[in-house]
Length: 237
Image 1 (tube, rainbow, N blue to C red):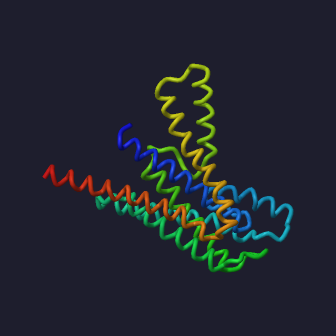
Image 2 (cartoon, rainbow, N blue to C red):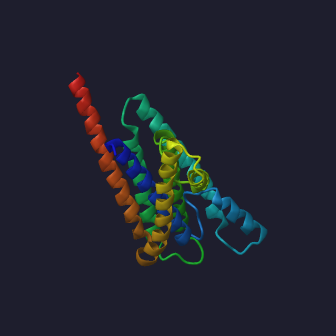
Image 3 (spheres, rainbow, N blue to C red):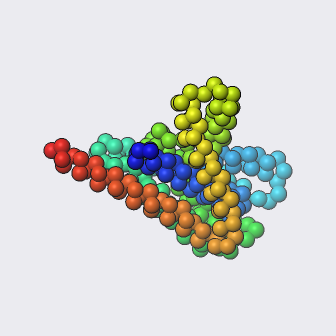
């Protein structure tokens, strides 16, 4: 396997794990709030409005504009960086890292989380949704060659279609490669979701140190790419 292919697989798997982990931790910790699969909050909002049970409706409503704001910030940042010819992915990781750290700190300060959301808990949820908004925007704008990592429904659909074609002997090499491409982030997302539920029960919001560490590792890999590109330019000059 080429080094670039291995790098892409590591990115796709790591980001899939991160999205499943952060989404599940937010759901478990913050009254069923989706931070990555943000449209899922519409289902919960509708259910709460139809059968009011005193749930944190405002938090779920605010998560959507917060997610959009995260996408907007990432889009503007990436547009400026690309215009300047800079390595946008490195800085996009930094933006997501800052927001994830803020999510962890705000959640930690809001702990223990009671039956009703406090202002600090609501701020934590809002920042968490912003972080995953930047995650989704980064995937669309800079990692479109990879399988999506935040929304798994489309991935699962494509994976099942390709798997059926492989099993019935109707798949060419492209379909087989795409099947593998979609498999790893789906599995990683699931592992991250399960892991986050257990990690939160033991460590609370400090469990977010794991996805933060994953982002730092991805930044380390990307830093190596920046040095390699810079070295190639020097040689060419």
